[in-house]
Amino acid sequence: MPEGHKTHFLAREHHALLAGEPLSVSSPQGRFSTDAKKVSGKHLASVSATGKHLFYEFEGGSIIHVHLGRYGKFRRHKSPAPEPVGQVRMRMTASEVCIDLNGPTTCRVIDHEIKRSVIDRLGPDPLAGGRKTEVWNNISQSGQPIGALLLDQKVVAGVGNIFRSEILFEAGLDPHLPGTGLSKEAFDRLWKSLKRMMTVGLKHGKIIAVTSKEAGMPLAKIPEERRFRVYGQTECPQCSTLISSVEIASRRMYVCKHCQV
Image 1 (cartoon, rainbow, N blue to C red):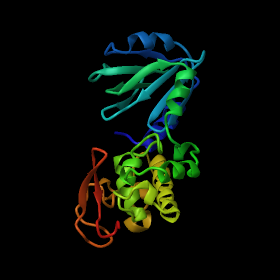
Image 2: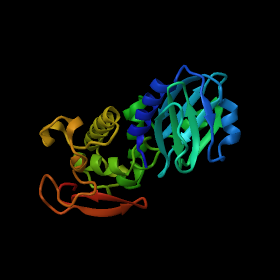
Image 3: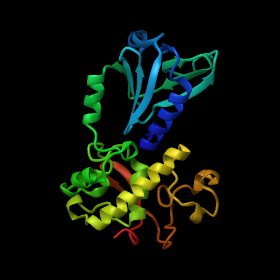
Image 4: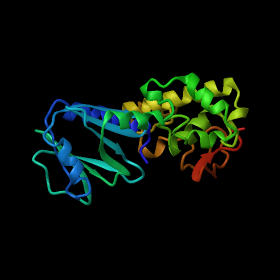
């Protein structure tokens, strides 16, 4: 599932490509046809993201709300649009570009009131000015494991399974530690790691946990297989202990039991 850095990256990219133009919006698959007619032909005013949610705002106040979920994916083409590939839920066509959306969890037209209700259900988004103190309050008052709290979008918006493994490793924290047992000093380390990794992810459009110093090369040149320290890895880069996988909040994550105590 794309994490928060990716939705913000897509929002920036799609705003640059589509905003200010009248869009032809259709649903080759058919499931979005009724809503597509509500916005097709209207000018797209802006594209924004909050957590893992995307919002395409059109003149007149209509908004396309997209949540990619585990299987959602965008494909970009040059206009004129090619034949659809697979089950294309939504196609947005501008003068020079066409963007297809396959397999989202959510794709619907909403108004500003519903958009606000979606955002109000989310915790602070670190990439959208979310406040550190609010995240601290959400975590420190909960007895749930920190590994579960980081996945809870009501606690902090945008963190997914890869980020939580890499953030907790960098901060040296056991994912089983309850939020009520997290010291302010430890939370400060966690927040610093979270902000750094999400900011790097937004810049490059993908999660990169290692630093350029560790990799010995600019982040833009790091090979795919060297982006992570623990996620999907077998050996800890710090102590050479075997990496363990544990299940927290019904998702598998990766831990070094020697460094994360």
